[in-house]
Image (cartoon, helix red, strand yellow):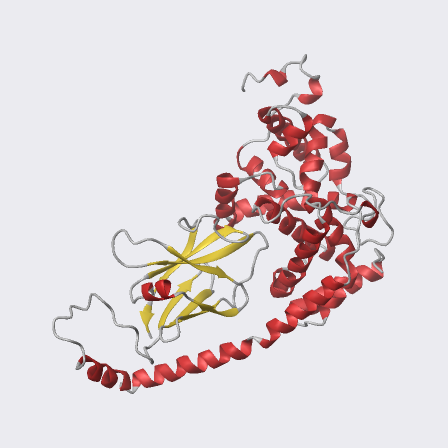
Length: 258
Length: 189
């Protein structure tokens, strides 16, 4: 027991006394209320993702507090809000076409690789490498460079995030179609290039339930190499506020050739 | 028109089931039945009509993408949707995407709190939930800030400033209040 002066009968009456909520129950209640901020909020989000018992505690507080929302009066949004929602849904319905095209390209690559056409092209290309080139300066990827892929399994689930990088187009295909958002977090992908002292770089947010195409800038595209680690972190909605520091890493994988 | 009648609740439940099964048309039904309730929540938390409309759009788009997460055995559709909207709105505040109250909500646009409008979907139409009566048993110094924190998404620091007390005092009030609230609600289970 702390010697908190509020415990004293003279400091506002006995009604204000009594013990404070402590431990996980306090954290769960404060998280459900939205009272946590900064580091404490992020750490608690990490626990929500990793500890089902703690998540259940938060869920229980939420369920108990929720009827209070009836005390808020209703309000009518402008009719344009539905129009915007409707337009966004129509857009989303159009997009899978592109993804299918990309998947066909990848399938084509896999067949080409199997037929060792790539090996033949590579052998030819070697003839033109000037003597003395130690390979430290990578040539620009020739059109037709095979894709790199990474599979990132989500712990304790059959789910995975699939990454396919197309070097000749500096495009990243992120397949997160099996995932669902929880409404309180975003997940962010990060590239950790091989080698000591390498800086982690953000590859952007994962859009759960979708397959999307991301254009990478030159610098980032060059860092997408075989053997690089891909990390998946849990972040506040909107992504990591500090792009040099991922939140809790919840899954990872390695970039490899097909 | 939004109603809290058993028929409306049934329609919402069926639409949520269809949505979970991937029926895009069901989203419009869910929207028509719930937008007034959810927009009221977003307005109250964000304090800005435009931000609240952006949040509302985000809520329904996210709902469409994640409808399969709704578990009918654990919460009524309206309770789940209201929780979802509230948490998304509070997140927008916390991640600094929104400056609270940049343009105040037109008071006429929002029905007065506590008026329990007949045309709004209710989570707890009969007000049988323990939280109502339990909150009333608390000292107003504890109960008031708990209510405000929950309904307006305020932080400890904002609540302390509003009531003109040190941060530590506000934390202590709320944590004592929450302990009592938990004990009271557990007695009712």
